[in-house]
Length: 231
Ligand SMILES: C[S@@+](CC[C@H](N)C(=O)[O-])C[C@H]1O[C@@H](n2cnc3c(N)ncnc32)[C@H](O)[C@@H]1O
Image (tube, rainbow, N blue to C red; front, top):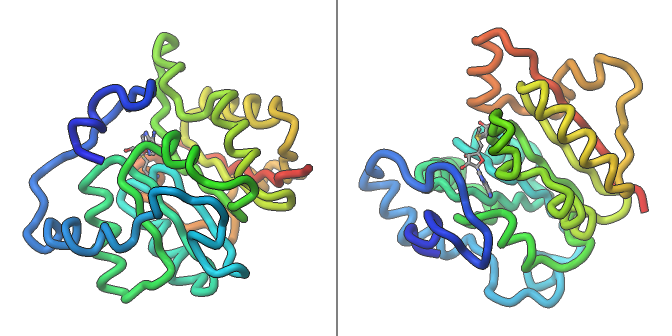
């Protein structure tokens, strides 16, 4: 997918936000040229077996930013395949450097819009999905830009297998409420929290991200919403 496509309307979907930042370092540019194409997904996917070995769990991270969480989860879970989708080239380049530095073999990377990439994946192909600190679009007139929308949650419900899990994290209170409402309204997810600590305290298997660090430094409490795909 070319940079121009990312910046404009693609298949009826408009991508908001940055697709590219500062110029890549030579090593990063080389990795984008050489390593990224080897980590992508096939153009046509008819079954999960086209992506990974039959018994390997597949975890997805949407909008991985600087890839801190994606890389750490891949290191901590070598038997799981982590699929990261991110339109921001500099974030993708960071992920690629991490893949090379740590010799990771369980990461798949796609530079693009998650809404498009997800439409190519087969039903019930995901064991877990993470959406961490998505762009909050605070102005009311921009809420339609939020990644969490009823249709997007329907797509997540199609993709996450029954019993699979979804984690959403945000430091923006009105987006927390928005996400909780949209995900529960879908009817295919149950919220696993029983006590306030379950959403106010980072889960044991969570890896803090760059945005989370900034939010905490600014004194904004972070909320972690864990869901199970029910039926
Ligand atoms: C606020 S940043 C958070 C990044 C990272 N998750 C973190 O916590 O540090 C939101 C990220 O979502 C990405 N993003 C925005 N729209 C997206 C889309 N349609 N598909 C995938 N990622 C998207 C942005 O490029 C950006 O990196």
